[in-house]
Structure formats: C-alpha cells, structure tokens
Image (cartoon, rainbow, N blue to C red; front, side, top):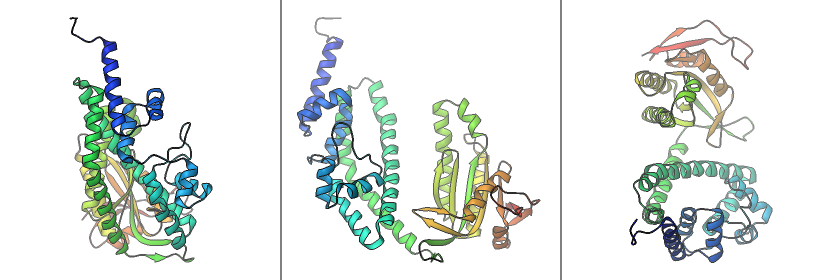
Length: 362
C-alpha cells in the first residue's frame, strides 16, 4: 500500500460522510440520520426521503387527526392497506398517504359501507405491496448487486437510486393510473348479476386451474437461479396465453395458477394452448389443468363457490400435460372441441361421483 492509498477505515469514513451529505440534501433530520446508522441502511432512508418530497411523516395520532378519522378508524384502514399501526420507536405514516386516505375511507364508506371499503383497501394494499416487492427485488438483483460487484461505491449506488426514482416514478404512477382506468372500463362492460340476496356480484365464467407436475421435488434440488427461471417461465406462459386468449389471470401461487374466461370455448382454447406450451418447454415442467364453468361469486377480485371448488379438484384427475373438464364445459363447447368421457370419480368435498371429460382438441 502506498502512502496515498486510503485504508479500509478511511474508505468507511468517506462512505459515511458521502451518505450523510446525500441524506441531508434530501431533507433527513439529525434524528433520522442517527436512527439510520443504528437500525436501517442509508439506502432505505434515501428512498423514503425522495418519495416523501419534503413532507415529514406523521405519528399515528397526527395521521388520524389530519384524515378526519379517530385513531381506531384510521388504524382499520391503515392495517387494511397492509401496514402495521406502529413502526419502531415512533410512528411513520407518509403525509401524502394521509392526504389521500379520506378520499377512499370516507368517500367509499358513505357510498358502499365500511366493510366493502375495507375490502377494497385490502385489495389495494395487497396489489401495491406485490408491485413494490417486484420492483425492489428487480432493482436489487439487476442493478444494485452488479454495480457493487463491479466496484461501484455504495454511496454512488444510492445516489443513482435517488436519481432513477425521481426520473421514473411519475411515469410509472401514470401507467398504474391508466391501467386501472382501462380495467375499470373492461370490468364494467362485462356481464354480471346480483346474487339472490343482492349482497354480492355473480358472473358466469370458465374457471381453470393449472398445477406444475413434480414442482415440490424440483424445488428441493434446483439452484435458486434455476428455480427463479422455472417460476418466471411458468408465470410468463400463463400471463401471455391467458391474456392473448381473452381471459384473466386471477392469481399465481408458486407452482399453480387460477384463470378465468368469459366462455367455455375461450377457456378451452386457453387450456389447450397453455398445456401445449408447457409441454414444449425445456425450462418449465408439464402441467395438469382442471376446469369447470358456471356461476361464481365475485369478491375483491377473486372468485368463490362450487364451480371454483370443482375446477380445483379436477386438477388431481388430470394426467401430466392434459386438461380435465366438467360436464358443463363439455356440453357448452362440444361443437368446437372434442372430448373423451372419463370414468366417474369421486371428488373431495362433493357427494356424488363426478362426470368428467378429457379435453382432446378442436
């Protein structure tokens, strides 16, 4: 080492000073700087600072007062959105969220009632939490880790994070808003009916479930990179094929997926294409697919009822790379597709043996 080269301790001190100057420029208080040194990384605080845009977070009591709710009412919506009521030694409720919350909490409550409003808040919370995790994880693995591995200092990486967030977030927020508006129009234009008690929406849908064969055993043997590629390939195939076929992916659960379509014909086409795509894939295992069609209860973006339960049970009757469907689907789609009747089999949760069919093709 030459006399001009910094020691490890010098490098740590320089990084500390650089990060401190950045955080102060972004508006960090001395209390926040001290807290970040003790319990959180400077990168986390930098992101919070750039997102709050100069507006200090509020305590739980301040947030309740500002939103026009009592603490109990604010806490119900805060938890429904997916947040704990208290974080660390002091509450940190973003000021912009507090400003927006009354629009939802009070406006929707007056129109729809407390329970429905809380249900909508839960959907918003779970959906946006998943978006946030996807974005943060992607940036960590595709940007932060490669930069640090290449020798870029942590303070420079954090500075780049701040710049990227400032430049990109407004456009991303606009995208989410535009997509929401388009989906509102799509859903509103679909067929629906109230249930017998006029308490929930019902829709007639094709409901399908797809499960990967042998996933549990594979997950124990694959490397994290290979498992990530497998799950990513499965999600890509499901999303591409279901959406291209006019259906909707309701949820992805690791090695499984639930999807719906407006007609039996559309659902059968999606199921066949998905089964074939996965059978041809060198990355993703084969899949079993089960499906039923009929009236389902629509609640918070998900579907429930006998049709959904039967579709989920039919998956177990399918051989790898095959699709098993109910009598209802065979009756509705018999002019467009060919089916092979299977021996009646018992389904868990259903009393009578099920009449089922293997979907063969067009």
